[in-house]
Each structure stands twice: as structure tokens, then as C-alpha cells.
Image (cartoon, rainbow, N blue to C red; front, side, top):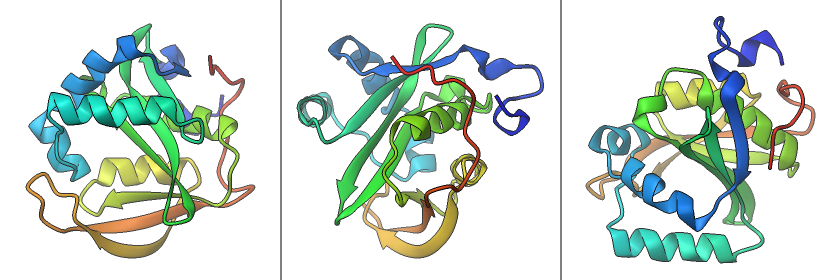
Length: 178
């Protein structure tokens, strides 16, 4: 594993990815209900019915790559890749209690070893500096800007569009995908 994807005290060694299961959904639901996380991601929380319907569709769609992010065996979040407007996008959600530990960077690096579609895009709220850093550490570069109706209160949010091309970015060592 490269030092750029690992914190100095090896806090990310416990990061693993595995297939999302229905048993993960209660934790993922609670994580997406956090108001601070919603502000950072500029994405509104879903009520339980909408959340369940969304994940039922995600789990049934073989074209969507979806992984649960585990940290020391606990569900820390999820990461997905899907088609939007004809191009592959990646998105992730990390529970607030796992922020600032390098977990998102490690998980995205692992995921990029598994999802090989390139270019791969990401959209991130301009104010979400932590997520921008995660993407840049994994080889993504800002390639555009947009406004999306994704704010927690339905307002438009200014976003950066980032992309990683074939051969861009470092990859972590051996994959730990389940």
C-alpha cells in the first residue's frame, strides 16, 4: 500500500470492501440521516420508505457496482458506481463517526481496482473539501462545474465534476474486495 493512501499510524489497514447485503441497510439508513453529513454531501436524507425502495433497486441492478465499506469489521459506509447521463459515476457515503481517518481514500482506491470503467466521473459539492481531497488522492482531477438540485433542502448546489482516466492515480496494494 502506498503511503499516500495510508495514514501515518496505519489507521486504514482495517478497511475492507464486500458486497452490500440487506443486513447492512439499517446502518446505512442511519448514516444518511445525519444532518451534518447531509450538509457536507449536499444530499438530502431519504425517509425509510424512499431509502428502502432506492436500495432495493440498487441491489437488483447488476449494472451497479456496490460495496459495503467495512472498518475493523463494522459497516463504515458504502461505495457505488452507476451510469448517469451516459457516463459512469462513482459515489460514496461514510458514516460521520468514521470521518478523518483515511477510510474513504482507502475504500475508493480499493474500489478503483475493481471498477475499471474509464473515464470514471464523480460529482461533489464545492464546499465538501474533504471529499474533493479523497478523489484527488485517488487520481481524479476537476474537469468541470455544474449546479445540481441536490441540497438537503432541495436547493441548487454548486458542484465540481471530477474524472479519472485510464492510468491516472495510484492504486492501493492487494485488493480486499469480497
